[in-house]
Length: 397
Ligand SMILES: *Cc1c(COP(=O)(O)O)cnc(C)c1O
Image (cartoon, rainbow, N blue to C red; front, side, top):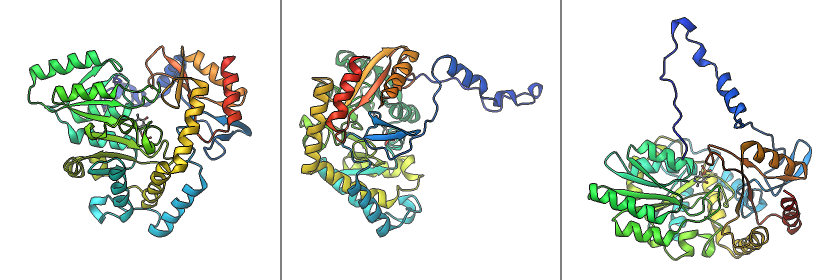
């Protein structure tokens, strides 16, 4: 987990330093540089498709989360434009203030139906979904039990909730069982929510969902499952890991995002009608934030249809073929190559870029210290030659 960074209390500038030295970030930036952890924004001079242009060079893009190749898809762009024509550019207010426009509502109905659940609520992003919904679902008398490798948005959502946070080692169901037993022994009546991901964003492995569901049922807990990297990718009609295992009915909260395989942006939570009503009343990132552009919701509906269509199935089957080629037996299109040191990861990424591949180096705090890595993400939009060339490129890494 990311460690909470110690920040000086507000207003600690003293008259001695003119109150100013605490305002200069250059030492923090120098520290980041010294540790090989400085991040800078690099330009991308083309749409984020499978082949991209950076500073006049063409690169095969193995950095995006566009697993189905929908982000630069002409039909999806057309649906977006149609949405703009129909509903205008912006939504003008929170849905609770001005009223809720048809596309948000239609998208939620379509999502709930596709996931075989009662209800869904959409947010401006996956991040906003996590930080808004978790504090709505749990408070100071409750316990959130997180996998150690949970995404930053889940960590921040858990912190914001004020609930007690417990952490179990990544995918370790024996430890999770012991934690839940201990919590129940002390707090028999507390609301306990286990929080994990279906496909982990930086490792590309999957959680042992069936075992986790058994444990949460045995200990009277709920399950919050973030399907960000499996929505569109796994399961029948791309509906995720829980759908793949036929376990959707047993997951209390299915979170996901339209920003990865769906090729757009926006987040969602699928749950019961009653929980959804509570979220409408309590999720602050929903209540106090302007609704996503209606055209985006309109496009998201088109994306959901695409994901569920025969074309979606064909894209998933190509993606599975590519995964098998690069990393036989791996369960997802996110393929990590752990190198350890920050510099080693940065250098490997630079070498690959020089050979025409965009593959990002991922460092702390996105991954634990000492596990810096290359993160290859495959897309159905890659041509066979690109994946073949990457296999050759990686073999000499
Ligand atoms: C990307 C991601 C999110 C955030 O989704 P956005 O729509 O990009 O804000 C949440 N959880 C996981 C696991 C993610 O990988």
